[in-house]
Image (cartoon, rainbow, N blue to C red; front, side):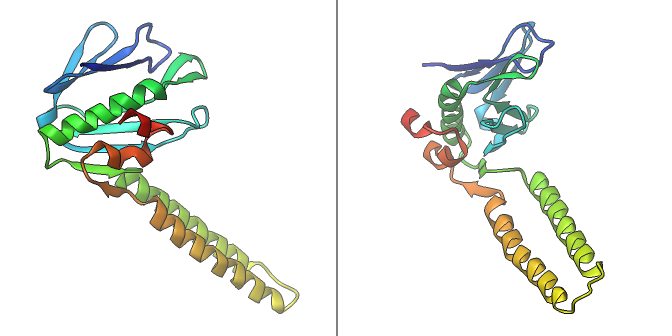
Length: 195
């Protein structure tokens, strides 16, 4: 059985992008008929992540990186109109699980990842660390009338450090073994019923 997934990505397109999970490759048919074939055997990594945006708070992505084909980033958001998106998780989830199963079968040395990419993680951690340092500088540089407020400021900074450490540990990209059930935490709710 060939599993397909379709969605419109931009307001300038009248037709949907279509992806087909074939036995030996992922076929991407763009509006207008152009197609791209990404053989499963050429895949070097696959990543699934929860990646919400302002207008798509339920958005999940599947990223497939191949030696020969360009990086494919497929999400579960279908554009209906300007600022109007439809959650297509019911079709996206079985499609993503089928892709992961085919990659595990054809490219067992490929790496599986859950969560944000390493580049995004490092950028976010740098921004958060810079903001924490800036907040500490501002808190300590503000003039205080009472001597005890310096201790309060240090306590506020000290309370923020463990929270930052917990965020750093929990949000880092994680390796995932290449079997569909391992990717369930990064896929939409109810993904387990598709196995």
